Length: 73
Image (tube, rainbow, N blue to C red; front, side):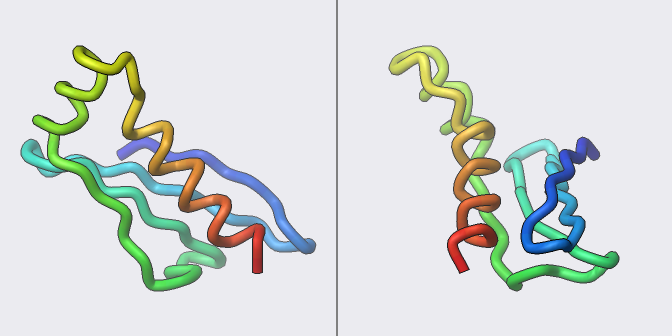
């Protein structure tokens, strides 16, 4: 598991990036609990194809979306 942290409105958040070998999952936590109940996901095939064909980092985009969903509240 990989994690990234950020702060917003005085709270600490942790973005967890997890793979089960078939998909990548991104979820935001605060104080050890899910921050918004949303799980962002993409298959590894999609991640690979997007990187190869479109030079797009899908995982990075999932992380940006997850963080944005918290900070735009």
